[in-house]
Amino acid sequence: MIRFSVFHDTDWIYPDTKHNAINHITMHLPRGGHDGAQLLVDAGHAPVSVSWSPDIPYSPIEGSSPILRIYRLHSVGVNENTSPTVMTTTDYESCREFVTRKAPFEVYDALEPFYGEVPEGGRFALYLCTEASPETTPGIYSGRLTIRQRTCEVIIPVHYTVHMPVVPALTQARLGMLNFFDYEGLASQSKTVKGSTEYWDSFRQYVRAQIDLRCTHILLPTGDAIHQDGLLTGFDFSMAERAGQIALEEGAVMLCGGHVAHWHEWDEDEYYPNWNQTTGITTLQGYMEMRLYFSEWFRIIQKNGWEARMTQALADEPQTHNDRTYRILAAMFRKFLPGIPIIDAVETVNLGGGIDIWVPKQDTYEKWKKDYEALQAAGEEMWFYTCAFPAGPTMNRSMDLPLTVSRLVLWMGALYRLSGFLHWGFNYYIGEDIWHSACCPHKGALLPAGDAHIVYPGKNGVPWRSMRFEAQRGGAEDYELLIQAASVFPEKTDALIRTVCTTFRDYTRDGRSVSAARQKLLTFLEMEDFYHG
Picture 1 (cartoon, rainbow, N blue to C red):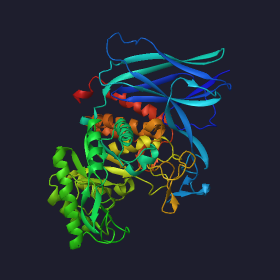
Picture 2 (picture 1 turned 60 degrees about the vertical axis):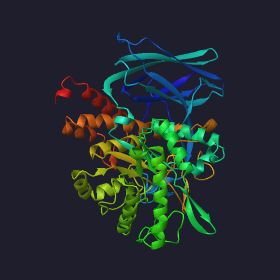
Picture 3 (picture 1 turned 180 degrees about the vertical axis):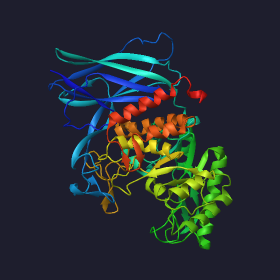
Picture 4 (picture 1 turned 90 degrees about the vertical axis):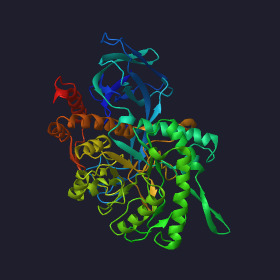
């Protein structure tokens, strides 16, 4: 006997999830976008085959058809809960109001491309993802998913409606996105030697994953310092150069130069070069070293013709204590790399003239909302970011928060008219076993589950996506449609957003509510008089 249930793509399912009464799959997606559903299956302990057969679309108009992809879901261990304040906790009573369940627990997050058979049978879960190109003919499509085991067979009807609205290509995207990349870790993740042909082949696969996530910017590694007889003589930018070439070959819109300096403690006023942690950048020696770095880096940019494709990160998270020093660093950069925009995660509003793309943390933006809104109104570009702080129910990609959060964080971006999103943890697999300990170690504590990574090390150097990856990708697509709607009916669009989230701490935990809001958005954009205001 085979038993199955269907779940929304923004609700977590677990190895012990109980079956529900939903036995058909219905999806709604825009052109250029996707929609998904999860399938929980119980079968006997014998090989199980799964096959997909599309029907002829109901629409008689010829056009390219959507594609349905199938992934097998793998469970990942969450070893501690998100703390109400900072990092993680083992005190469940302190966080039970906002987490999904008590740690430790297993949750289906990792997505392995599925090739049609589950050799061991038993309980397993699948993720079905339908994707439509911008040229797909709108209409209702259908097919059948067949699950067989020995003499037993079940057929699951699948219907997916492709709607008229179009999610633009990345080159026309209104939402910018940057996810930091772990170049050092990639060698161990892909079991290759850093800089080898196999290493770059794997990097290419990770870039493709970032572009699928709708990342517009690809972070490059920082140049490596070269010393002779104890003296700094130059920098090796070969890694950054090759990474940038591959990223642009794969369709990246923009590149971002890697960070060059940082503070020692968040409340001190000096910055130190990455390669020299004893010399402040405001000293003469510090300036000479930064001068050498920036001038050599600019020659690499000019050599490759990247001037119009570059942005630059200088020093992550400037604070109110060191914002003046950050401006000094920015002035150095502008002298040697004129015209290239500076982008950084920020924890202050006092960086005017020293930064081009502001990226305040979600709670920082709301804390100083009037100031940031004044900067936006003046024409400053404003993104936002999330990370392990401030924890609690604040929107982040944590695996013990509702999965709706990974999608709705970009609805909040649309509500506040923020034009980009940054996250530090694309593939930082910190610790010995991220499959069973998703709370990675950091400075003597643990990061919230999944904060360090949104993909998993797959086979042959190809990363596996996650359910959080798919939710964020969906949120990026929703953002584009929300901004289209807001350009004509801003008040109605904002009212729709507020049906599922009102601040970065207040949001629905129910995937059905998110799905209903998405369908309303698609219907809204299909109204006959929409583009006539």
